[in-house]
Image (cartoon, rainbow over all chains, first blue to last red; front, top):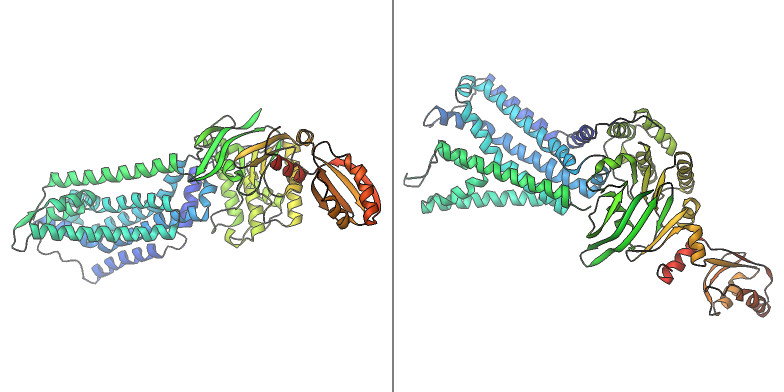
Length: 273
Length: 306
């Protein structure tokens, strides 16, 4: 009988997932090139100009927002690719059965898959962002670190919530392609819904619709804190204060936590294969 | 000692009842064959035993534990699924070595098991394996941690005849040398009968009969009468007219007949009469034990435990 030790099932499942998720790192290379282009522009004197900011905090927020734009979208695409399509395909291909033949609890298998699909992308996204910001405007960033953190926290809440919801969708439909299509439809539907509610707020001069959406997407609250929403006549419709912004961020992450809890519960206790 | 105990299992998929009040026990040190027609509930039963499906009713224990809640028992279980699924972009040896690290066995074991199953495409990606090679890979994967119990759902599918024979030899070897217990689901009854010492015959989600093969043959009076003749086809046509003949297998040298219980001796009276009628020569009449296939048909037809 061969001598047996406990083994490292979690680490090996994580390594396998990373190997499968990132074997064609095209989007990751694109994100890296985008970051490099930022430094190249800085090198030839391009830089970023932040105008019409009310104060230094608002200017910092604008700088972070501009820097975050395309990479955040790429991050969202990575989530769709790795979590929605990747995880959904595990069910379609049947490899999830093989994972369940290992001495590893279901929730640990899900954790390994999420660390690979979401965690690596998140670390890469945040790493590139903070590094780029410190290269571009180190003094501004250092002096307004809380604004930077609040900006990223509020912007990441919605993608993380979407991830949890689409994870559940992928587990239910068990097809990578279908889960991906549903994810794209959901994303655009919510974007359109946000646009409609914003227009409604402006036309009715009522901030309530925006407050509803801000629970789901706290970056709206952050945006209107630093750059208040005004009507066509210049009347302020919504300008949440800092504590309100924190509440929306807290509420947003409560939703994220609840959604992931449901996903974990479903995978660990309810999912039949 | 019972390694697997399933009590009153029930599982439904919408309106379809897959398993309905199934009871099954697998004793340590046995090779139990799980046989039944398509849709009988074999794969559903195996998935419940493996903790992939929750039953709607009943309970199952493997090594005394609930397979859903206790993944540690998988250290002693090797699983061969009907269709093998592995991450396709890993190389064969790399993935086997990874599996060694998962189970905490030395990485040298990877080559050992691959040689055991006759798969030497170490540097090929898993997606580049043929169906037969993939099945061998799955078998090696199931053996890598020297499990005490192996659960296999159609393990010989996609294997060529030589590989199938090698697999059966391997099962017998592991059983004899390492006292490994097997639960094997298969349609290929002649091969199952070569390795199994006990069977569970399942239909419509229930176990109709289970136990040692020898006991079941006695219980169901599964005997055959073998008539060796020079005109087996014509002889069989006449035999079909007899009311007590239940089933026949015709080959080039004669006919094997399963009769209703207690009527085997009637053949000794009727066979000479039929031979005289059709001008055939009877070279011999023998009474023997039925094959597993014949036992299976008899049990399914009679519909359950006696």
